[in-house]
Image 1 (cartoon, rainbow, N blue to C red):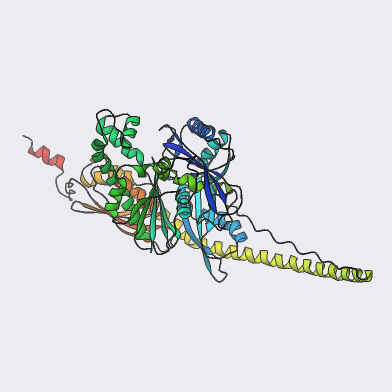
Image 2: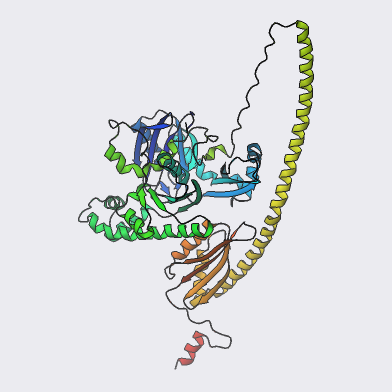
Length: 566
């Protein structure tokens, strides 16, 4: 049997446009659908994955509770967006207890937030082989405030928050439950929500790459609003293929296909990063989920763009249900948008030590992993022996116990000292490159401040290269700094360093939003010598060729104008 018998949780997917609820019942490894509900959410309730109006979210959850009649009080939900940090790190091999004690210190070296401001959890990815020198650990950290907001709305609705996962891994759980993992295939799970798209790449039967994109169904809706001067609700109806006034689905097709092409571009950038930072092969298959995945013709646009099999993920493919309780046609029509809630619904309360799911993240556990209980010793029955033997036996046992206790005390003390020595050695080894990195960062920061100062001195003119430098500077996100910028005709080459690939992706997205810049092209991404940051080279073209930079002794444009005046 794959799944354990712990208490199940109700999967609650709190999205930007809808709140989805799924309750499953598991018996002998087979899941049966018990309850399902979908409640629309006002656009201003959640913006960019952050809860802006908690009362609207609480009302939606309470409506779902009333409509479905759910009795289980244990609810699980998940989060996504820029507040979610996922890292795969390599550590010296250690037992689970040692890892639980040291994970917070290790996390501080890899999380770009104050460790006290995040909720943290982890899973080990390496096989439990005592011969291995190192182990891989999947580390997940989310801003504490964000997790608390999602936990709070569940509590206010009268339910108990038992689990907080990550959207990308909830999708993976739903996929694993319903499809066979092919270790020879690289599969991209793409969950398209209203505001955020989650991408989880599976290779060798394991997650190897994750990224969230700030692009989703809202972009399709807004494009229809602009094109046909519609309200948000009208544009939503038209997006789903319904006629609105004099506008039909055929009228909307061209607009939707254009936005689908933009979505494909965003996904392609993610695949480019995956190819540049991973040794895995190219993506062999796309599995789409989320409400946005139901956009007319989007599936066909992506299939044509990437040239690989592309299909909608059906989270109920291997889940039983009574057709007297659920209409099959209706269930099939909304299945892809319920993938996250199904992935949450297969989880159990306290399933961190289960061997079922590829990822068992629970940010409410704060990185604490349960320790397997020791088996009790069997009782010894001496039968009807001579009483003197009892005294002799008791003396021997007491002596053995005292000796064993003393040995255990010394052995435990030696183990503790050994663990402290190993920990200290690891800390010293870790701190050396980090201290060097800090010094390098400070030097690069001073260099960046000098360049920014030069840019500020030139902002009065705002011409040619100066204007481009100003736009590039405005596009720089946190954790990214530039080392050089060169002009080749209408091409600009940028060389820099970033803390992680997500920061590089944000920089490229920001550059892509500048009207005068054509689509940036990632030339190269490599880890630096310490492995703590990434070096990159990006090129892009601008629409207008800047005027040449005046050489020393040349007349400025203002001077030339003055001389030409009568």
